[in-house]
Amino acid sequence: MSTEVMGGDGAAADVGSSKEKETEKKKRSRVKQLLGDVKKQVEFWFGDVNLHKDRFLKQLIDESENGYVDISVLASFNRMKKLTADTKLIARALKNSSVVEMNLDGTKVRRQHPLGETPINVDSRTVYVELLPKDVTHSWIEKVFSKCGNVVYVSIPRYKSSGDSKGFAFVEFETQDQAHKAIEMLNNPPEEAPRKAGIFPKTKNRKPIHVAADNPAAALFRRMFVYCVCLCVDSPSQSHQQVDPETGKENQEDATVKAKRKRKKKHKEKLKIGEEVIPLRVLSKEDWLKLKEEYMTLQKRSMASLKKCINKIDQNENQSVMETESRPQEENAPSEKAPPHGPQFTSGVIVKMTDTKPLPGRQDTLGQICPVVYVDLLVGDTEGHVRFQSPEDAKAVCDGKAELQKEHSWTLEILTGDSEQRYWQKILVDRQVKLNRPREKKRGTEKLIAKAEKIILARAKQANKHIRFFED
Image (cartoon, rainbow, N blue to C red; front, side, top):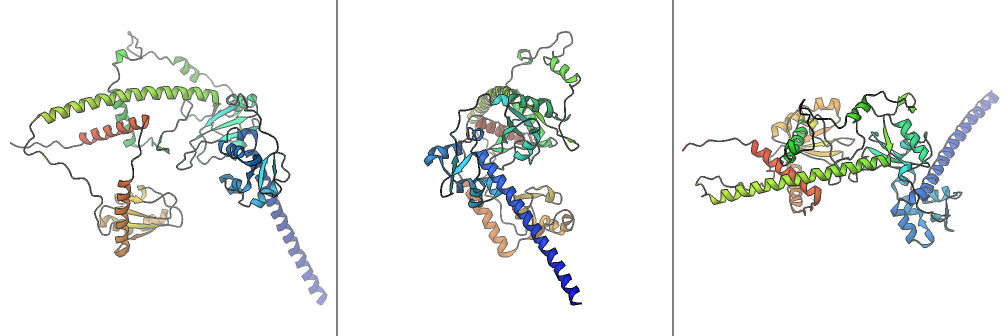
């Protein structure tokens, strides 16, 4: 009996030891993978291709003693933070590197060989790619384009304010033939994509402007903007359009382009990941630079027309002001409006929102129930405040939270008492800080567009005014 029990314990011990060995093996495998990733990243940073483009790291190397860079500096880079922040682990990964070498203390790293001359024909070896996914990464692009050749550099332009991708990237290959191969294999734009390539994102204060195609207000704004620009454009007889005297229709200069669109597309080899065709538009960087030059020329002409239009509007307004000042003032002229004093205290209109995950900084969801005046919420916050027009609206939203709970896990609470008083004080303080903030000086195109927007809004406001007739 005792022999059987001992045998069972021995078998259990063997199973336990085998599990420990398997766990230890997986752990060693993960560490080995991490060391390889760290080594690859540092060697890329100190490689010829990156150092010719990375001004920050190049300056550190030039200003340091004997070209050494502290490993703690590398550990502070965002890409390295995703891998590890352990400087000892980074030093361990670089021991057998063929690109970099460490000092005796193992705290600094430098290139083994001096940096070569600036490479030539970079643009001819680089392709421009657009229609990228919103959450695109360097590794995804490298995985896709490595099927066409050796990818030596990937650049994904991003907005400084949000870090979001601008929707396009540049991929540099080792040879020009590899770049041509990528254009042939991967240039498969979807049918609904714009015919003309080249994305030049609109920004305001270095932040992306998202223009919704189905937004009637945005469409109206664009129509008014075009109307404002066209006020000073020459008559059709003086324009660049050519009209056929017999048919009365414009001669299409791009007939050749349309013919090319209609002709049967040349068969291309489509790169697939699994069964999915990647819908990208790929062209050479040289072609993209030509498109960019065309875009800048068009923008310059548009700004010149807009400036001419604004000057004409200013002249007309100055003339009307002079005529108004020359007339005697009417006795019953309405007095000027006093400057607004900000939101007035109203009890029961502030709703506090909390959630376990970041809240959406939008008015749409709550606005379906009652009109929302203001949303006090930063991107990524799990707590925020919403101000409504009346206590009844705030109560209606809280009463209808059962419907919201089906889609969201929000906790809604109407502020009362001291918490409400403190929040209203915060509103007044924030408003005063905003009013006292120095205004950013606008110049050039930005100043011109801001002035045009101001004129458009003023005219829209004037057009919406009611005309009142007074009896004598």
